[in-house]
Length: 510
Image 1: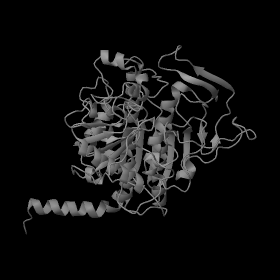
Image 2: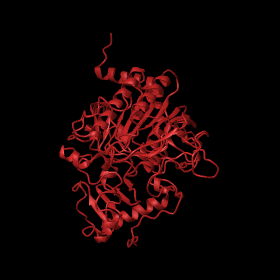
Image 3: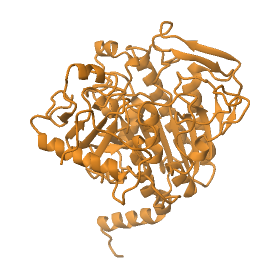
Image 4: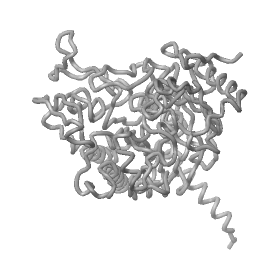
C-alpha cells in the first residue's frame, strides 16, 4: 500500500473543494445592509473603546473581514446611495449637494447601469427592502405637486435593476409615511402625523400624510421581518439572490422599542444602535437556518457618520465617541463625516478574523460583485467609473487597486485622499460641525486644508504652508479624476454636469 503524505492529502482536498465549489463561489447570495447615520465608533468591530454593546456585529466581524479605512462617498444619505448602486461618485450626476426629500422624483435614470442590473443579468433575483431615498415618481394631482396616493408609483427601484422592492421613499423623518410595494401603495394615507423636537428630542419626525399600516416605531423590525421572509423564500429556489437592505436607523426618529429602550445605559441613540445589532443577528441566524450560510456574502456598513441628533455631549459624558477620535460627524468633509464601519462575511470566500487597512469606498460594491461573479456588465456604456474591487482585501492582501479617494460634504465641498495625505478643499468642515463655511471665511481661515492622517488622525494641524508641493500634486490629481469622468483606468467619459470643485480664490497649479 502506498503512503500518502499529509501535504499531498491537503492539496488533494483543496483541489476537490475548488472543483466542487467553483461554480457556487461565482454566484454567492449577496445581502448588502447599510445603516443610516451610524458612526465608525458606534460598533465594537471598528472601535475597541465603543460603549455600545454590539455582540452580533462583533461576531460577524470575527467570522469575516473588518475594514478600518472604509468610506461612504458622501457625508450624507442620498449621494452615498447613488454611489453604492452605480459605482460612481454622486457629484458627477445632477446631485451637486444636499439630499433628496420624500417627494423627490427619481435620481438614477433607467439607462444608468447599477449593481442590481449586473446581478440581475447574471441570473440573480434582485430585491430592495428599506429606505430608498433616491427618489421615485409619485402620481400627482393634475400638474401640481400634491400626491395622488390612488395612482401607482413610477420609476422606482424597478427601473434600476430590482425585480421587486418594498420600502419608503425618504428618511424616516420625511413624509409621506407610506409603504410602496413595487409601484403599489399598500394603504392610502388617511391623516397627517408628526412629532416636534420639543415633544421628543430623539423621536421627532416632520408632519405629513401617514398610512394606517405605517407605524413609525415598528418600521425597523418590520423591514427586518420582510427581509428574513425574503431570505427564507429565496433559499428554496435554485437561483441566487441580491438583497439590498438600506436601513432607516439609527437616523431620526430615534425610536428604540422594548427590550432595547433604556438598555444601553447611555441614551436612546445607543439603545437604537443595540436594536440594529440585534436585528442583524436575527438576519444572520435566518440565513444559517435556511441552509445558505456558507455561500452568502453579507455586508454591513453605514451611509455616513453619526448625526448630532445622537446627542454627542451626553454620549461623551458616558465615555462614548461615535467618530472614534476622528474629527467631525455626518455632513462634514472631515473623517467623521465619511469614514464608516464596514464588515463583510462570506464563509466560503473570506477567511475569518481578518482586519484590513486597505482603502475602500462604498462605490466599490459594483466592481467587487463584477469580480465575484466573473461576469461582464449587463449594459454597454459608462459603468462603475469610480468602483474598485475589494477582492484583493478579501484574499488577505494589504491593498486593493484603489489608490485615491474623493469625498464630498453636504455643502458640496471636496476632499482628495492619497496614501496618508488628505486635502480638503474647504476653509471649514464643509458641513455642520464648527467651523461651518461662513464662519470659517469670516475667520479668514485658509481655503484649503492639508492633513497627514497617519500622524494627525484628528485633522487638527493644517500643513498647507509646510507642504506647498504636496498641495499642488494633489490638486492636479483631483482635477484629473474629475475631468476624466472616472477614477478607474480607461478612456475619459463625460460627467453629467460641469463639476466645479475649487474654493473661491484657489486656482489650479500650472
